[in-house]
Length: 516
Image (cartoon, rainbow, N blue to C red; front, side, top):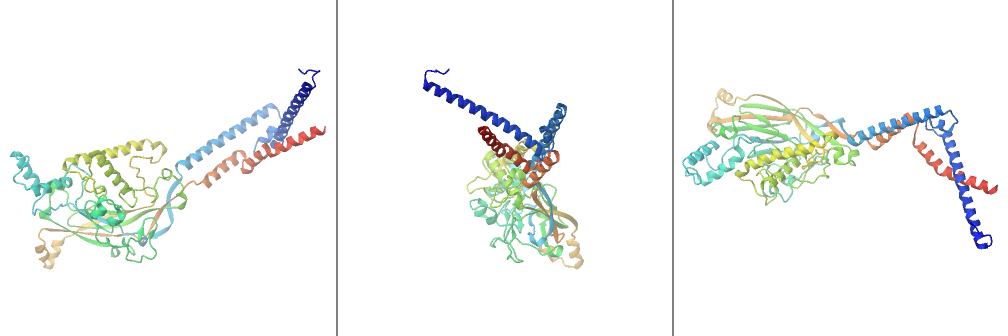
């Protein structure tokens, strides 16, 4: 209450009264301006159905249009979420390229050959079966620790052969193999690896032809424009056997050791990209003795469009060449990554690695007492990858695992069509009356291998955006337009009426009240 005898108190009361009056006027102006804006917006908006909210309609019609409007909003957001899930989970699609690619744009496949006959270089005439029988007879005679019928060198060779000839191990090591047209160890391995510093080998694979040449090709960029015809790795100019390679394969009956590798003899051949370290025991073509085998090659190449670079690797389900760095390899491929992961896992489980695995200079190599361990380690790693992968199957993509070896975004593989016939060398030489070859190489068993591109061009595949941000916005706009007639300008209209227009009306009403 105000004291009528106190002038100062009266002034404060008058100020409070004026403040309440002004506040009441402001609320009244705001309410009236908001009401005007609402009816004005409903009368002029482009959004379907909203105009009925600003009309004096029967209550039943108002309820009807409110329900229709709410159903439209629910349908819009339901369809938009469906589009979002498709854009988020499968943003990349692999489709055929618009043009064909000539075979001279890619390298001729690297060819790795391993013989099923494992020769013993130090002890002439000895086989795995001889070693095994001599050792078991010594053990039966009670010479468990110092067998008298086997020298120390022979025992060391036998211990080495256990890694190659153990028939209980499906994924055997292949011993000495030979690769044509593969990258040298200096281009494959990093400088601090054993393979880079000592010899060109994986499974003691020998690389010799291109060890001193300059690399003029990469999987991402292809060959250099000025590389010419004689390139490293090599390429061919066309298709057919004339532009391919012929390889004569020779083995000897007296060196065949069925106890080491089992009843199947001959050679294993693997076709792979030059920048891949071959896994011969996992994927190979078998070349029997006394046969001619023709392999018609069809390249399978996947390239990458620029638009997918910004996606996370898990979304596009592949790694770009500079996204995933390997410890032992300079070049990322899925095959190289899996081999490195197996080497690391084997070292963790067994404290050593197989002699064929990539390793650092001081990593221990497994002895024969670790054969079961490293064989078991590979099975454990497969089970671990399978178990971790199951956690993400509901999302229809390969999630993160221990190895994290997704495919490279740009990849090159070679599919093979195989035909074969008898290669009767002895009959041919006997018919010609020339037996000098058989006399010089007694017990010789010959096979012949021919590898060539089947066609001069092939169709590549391309990883590209299935749903880019533009496609996503276009789909959302189409859905909003179909159900509600909503557009970007409709959003601008809402912002305009809720801010600029509302403020302008409040100011206008306040001025009118002051005049009155």
